[in-house]
Length: 368
Image 1 (cartoon, rainbow, N blue to C red):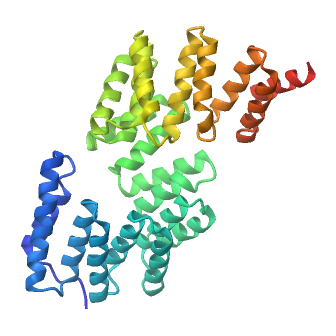
Image 2: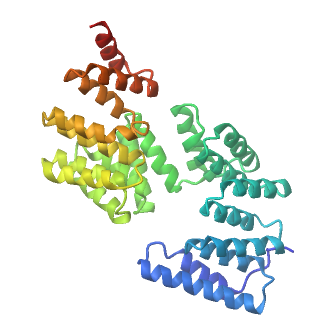
Image 3: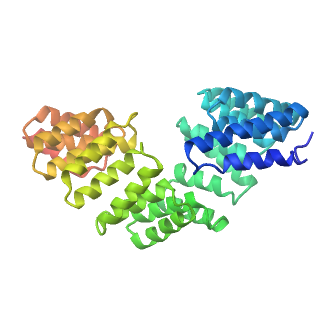
């Protein structure tokens, strides 16, 4: 059976209304999603043999956080049309939502055994990246690109996770943008890369364009706020505030707000913003960085013991943000806690073998 036949018009309309409600209020979005599910179920009560309606239902149930119901819908779509890529993709996403990653991997492998698909290769590659299996992921992404060499989503996946150099990453991102000049995620990623290269003008062009296309793009808001910290902290503060309107529980937004406030001389508010970033759990990269930033501000105020206390709070997350270990070792050395300093400097060098400053302090401590 082919899914090329069009589903009922009311189903498509209800699905599009619900899926385009991302920027609506939570109540309105919930209402549109529930209404979409109602329309799909009514259509299926009249004819339950249309795989595309089952896919619509599965996607809506995923958006509602009802992964079990979504799996049932996607499974039925696969029964009706085993070649439907979207049904297999949705089924795998549902399994991931339920934290059944091994089953998702098996489901994608089975689907690919029956039907080659750039989308499914990319999805499997992304799943493998999440498990740290980069060599296997690279194989999947390459297979997807062999099918669709200019697939911008696959190119972005490759650029973010699989490039061996920043120069290669730039080339892959530019290739993605040649395929789709308005690809917001690639623009934001390339802007961040240009910022890392010390090319602020090029970075700003990419980031401003990304925000023109998608005003709520968090990565672009973050990177542009970081870019403006030194020269225009008020604008940086405004951009950080916009990012927090999009996601009030975003630690990087709070960190950037804290930094902007510090540059503006509003130190008490800066500390409170960083404390908010540190309070967000679970602590990931930006949360760990926020702990470290609080220590940096304390040290800048000349409060070395306070800086050490801040870094000791951050110590459990040093693997996420290696400067924690380097600075903890350095400050311990300054206050004469030699054994503690040596221990943390070794940790820093395990994370970054090119950390010359940590190596020099460690050598001085070992000689003296």
